Image (cartoon, rainbow, N blue to C red):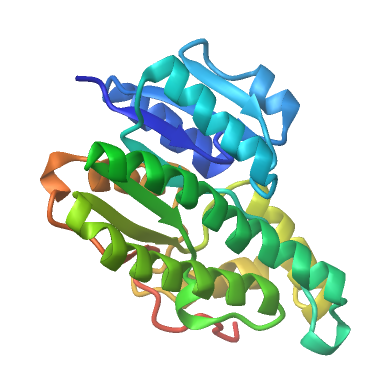
Length: 253
């Protein structure tokens, strides 16, 4: 039977890489996003919906629509997130803090809440939550993001305990520095705050890993597919970094 997979923020970046990897495994894929242009460009085999993950009613309606269309759901990849402001904590407004935490943490709560009900009724399901190495170590000038990503790890740990007896597995994937437009934006903002060049910061991210490298979206996607597979049938409650082996999250290069 084909896996039925929902990916939030799945029309671009890591989420789109996940969608394409699941398609290669012959899954049926539905994604949400707030980038209409990216949704319009999705491959024909991917169903897309314009929904903000912080919209509780919109997300509830989406899960109802999925149930009407598919009759069930097997995998949720809760992937939506934003970097938030890049600044020292005393320079961050409460509104900017709340917006970042809302998308990263509230959005994960809303998606997992509705998925959990379906999965409990089915007595099976898989939840993959995208966190970050910032959620393991913290990162200077990214306090809202780091705090929210720590938060989703706590949510994952709790859900794995709550839902395991229903045959539901829950794990968190922690990407390191991922090549692509989003991290280029992070580099630009960090450069402005720290006074370091883009290339200095780029090399710094690599230098803080044992493999001296960045990773790619497909690396994260392949891990998501593995965690949703029968080969990972007893993997739950785990924090799995795909990062080249971070040992110093803030090297001074």
